[in-house]
Image (cartoon, rainbow, N blue to C red; front, side):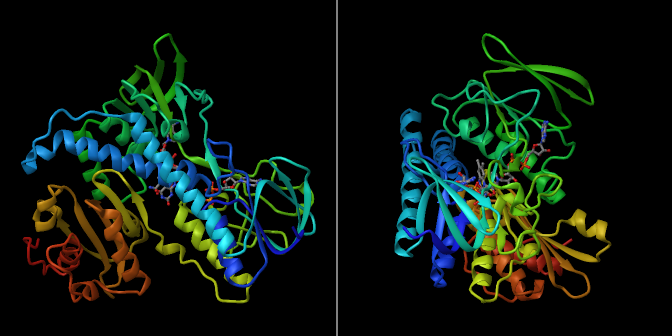
Length: 475
Ligand code: FAD
Ligand code: NAD
C-alpha cells in the first residue's frame, strides 16, 4: 500500500465514508481509516449510523410496529389472527443481518471506487501526516494533501447514573436487549428516548420517560409537539416533563431513580434504564496537540461554513462539528468538502436540513417553527390539514396528526413545514425540495398531487395557508 494519498479521511461513518467515495469519484487517491469493529470482531465501516444508530433503530422500529399492529390493529381491518407471539431473538437477528449487509455494502463501494479502506485508528500529526494504527500490526505513517476528520460522536453519560451496560444502558445497549424489560426507564425525551422507548413499549415494556425540559420536544413546532405528546401518552408512554434525575441506586431487582419536578421529589423503580440525554463529539486520541486543530468550548472541532478547521488543509465534518447530529447533514458536508478539494463548487444549505423522528406517528419538519417566527418578528401565514380528513390515511387506519405550513405573509415564501402523521419522514421530502427551490405556498397549491395519497395532506395544508382548502373548513 502506498503511504501517500491526496485525501485521508479519519472515520468511516456517513460523513467520512461519503466524503471518501466522492473524493475518489473526483479522481483523488483516497484512504478511509475506520476503527469500528462489528460483533463478529471484523471491521465494520458505516459508523454509528449503520452499526448502532439510524439503521438498527429503524429495523427494530419497523418490526415492533408490525408486532404492535398485528396484535392491536389488524382486527380493525377484519384480519383475524391466532395468538401473535414475539420471537425477540429472530427480531434482533434480522436487525443484525441488515446492519452487516449494509456495512458490507460500504466495503463494496470502497472497492468499486478504489478507496483504500484501512481498519484501525487514525491520529492527525503536524504537517498533514496521519498515524494509522491497524487493529493488528505495526503503526504506519501516511502523508496526505488533505485530511478530513469525521470521527463522530458518543453518548453523553450522566454523572449520577453511569452506564454499566446491563441495567443502565446507552442507545447501543438498548438496541441489543435480549429480553423485553418489564419496567423500562428512559431518561431524555429526545429523538433516541422516543424512538427506543416506542420500540420497547410496543414489545410490552412499561415505559416511563423522564425529561428535564418543561415543554415536550422543545426543538419542534409547538403545535406539532403537542399533538405528538397527546398521541404518545395515549399509546401508554408515561412521560414526565420538568423532571430532573437526581440519583439512581442499584438494588436487587432494578434501579431506583430519584427525580425532582415542580411537584416535589419522586422515586420510581425500573428494571433497566436507557440514558438518552444527547451525544458529544468524539476526538479522543485523534489530535496531536501540535497539529493545530482547535476545539470549541463544547469539544466540537472548530470549522467555518465550508468545514475548514484551524489547520491548513485539514477539514472536519459530521457529528464532530457544529450543527445537528444527523447522518444526512454529515454526508452532505462530506460531499461538499470532497467537491471543494477537487476544485469544484461545494455548499451545504444549513437552513434546509430536514429532521425526522421515526415514531408512530412520525414527526418531521424543515425550516422555522411558529415559535421561532414569532420570536424573530416575522409576519407569517399558517395553513394546517388534519390527516383525519385524508382518504388515504383513513384507508391506512393511520389518520392521527396534521401537516402545518408556515409561509411569509408578504412574499408567500415557505418558511417551515411541520408534520406529525403517517410517513411524515417521506412526506417531508416534498417540502425540502420546495424550500430548496424557494417555492411559495402558491407553488405547492398549484402542484398536482396524486389521489388518494398522503401527499394530498401537504397540498391541502398549502391551500389552507390562503384559506382555500377544499377538504377542510377554512378558519
Ligand atoms: P459516526 O457515524 O459516529 O462515525 C464515526 C466513525 O469514526 C465511527 O465508525 C468511529 O468508530 C470512527 N472513529 C472515531 N475515532 C476514530 C479514529 N481516531 N480513527 C479511526 N476511526 C475513528 N441520524 C439520522 O440522520 N437519522 C436517524 O434515523 C438517526 N438515528 C439514530 C439512532 C441512534 C440510536 C443514534 C445513536 C444516532 C442516530 N442518528 C440518526 C445520528 C447519526 O447516527 C449520526 O448523526 C451519524 O452517524 C454521524 O455520522 P458521522 O460520520 O459524523 O459519525
Ligand atoms: P436529544 O438531544 O435529541 O435529546 C436529549 C433529551 O434529553 C433532551 O430532550 C434533553 O432535554 C433531555 N435531557 C438532557 N439532560 C437530561 C437529564 N439530566 N434528565 C432528563 N432529561 C435530560 O439527544 P438524543 O436523543 O440522545 O440523541 C442524540 C443525537 O442523535 C441527537 O442529536 C439526534 O439528532 C441524533 N439522533 C437522530 C435520530 C433521527 O434523526 N431520527 C434518531 C436518534 C438520534
